[in-house]
Length: 264
Image (cartoon, rainbow, N blue to C red):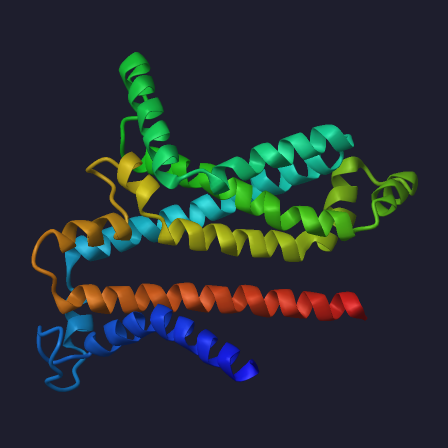
């Protein structure tokens, strides 16, 4: 039974990762062929970094991901602290509301945000689809992930430590930064990395809210696939996969170290 279980798991991972392995291998293919190997080369990576369209999209992607992660982390952390201090029924209600954007289909969220931006633009002349709407959309869908990561750390914390700090003369702001924040910092960092990863990887919401003036990498890749696919896309996809994999490794290492500290 154990042998069958191992074979079953191996087949699942093979089905999931074999296409990615093939993509990575053919990003170093000396030919544009996607089925025949003609030798090793890195020219597609050189061509990728000389493509102004891709570089502009990469710049927008990184700026949006970093800013959205930072802003969502601040808002999500404060929201988690506020929710944690509420009574049980209200807390459960707000956490259920917080989970809705994560289980809601992205196409619904993307279309809803697009319609809202169009309405505001026609009514006030503000929020024309572009970089601002793209950034606001990424901040919006990243906040619930931060709240989800911070809440467990708040539950693990001794809530009387904050009250003790106030009794010893700390102001509420000082007590938060000196007592509460160090205790929940692993959750805050994990939430920020999660928000960065989700922003970096998003396509559907970005497609509906970016307009034509500010497209991130995922939208640019989609537009490139409408034309003839070149190995530059393989190279770009390989780099994106590597970046996301690195971030996931960092998150897992951070969580393992945090668990070890909690045991001791």
